[in-house]
Amino acid sequence: MSYDTTTHLQRSLRQCLSTVAALLYDHGHVLESITLSHRGLDQRELGSLGTASRQWKACQKVLESSEAATYNEHERFVLTHMGRELMFDMFGQGAADCA
Image 1: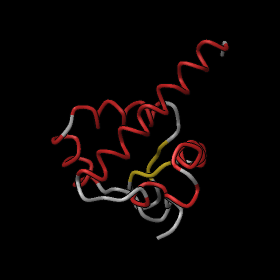
Image 2 (image 1 turned 135 degrees about the horizontal axis):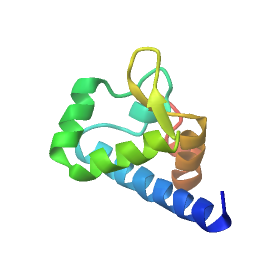
Image 3 (image 1 turned 90 degrees about the horizontal axis):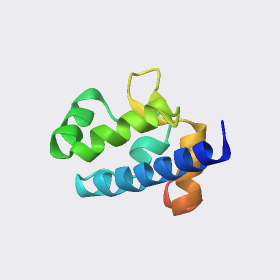
């Protein structure tokens, strides 16, 4: 991957993480909804967020395709290690790492 591609991907991921954080808060969720691997968002919650905002669907697609997010063993949407690291880098470790 070239430097420009890497830079663009990281910028896109950061923009999506910022958008996702805002949308979570706007719809009554907290960052821990996606930063804790044993929690996550179920299909109903994802559908509700997607219906409320087209931005959610676009960001979810970016996060999944870049492997910053995945589904846990309970089929709930969560950030991967990389996604959590970027989120913590942006918002601070204490902002999103406790239940």
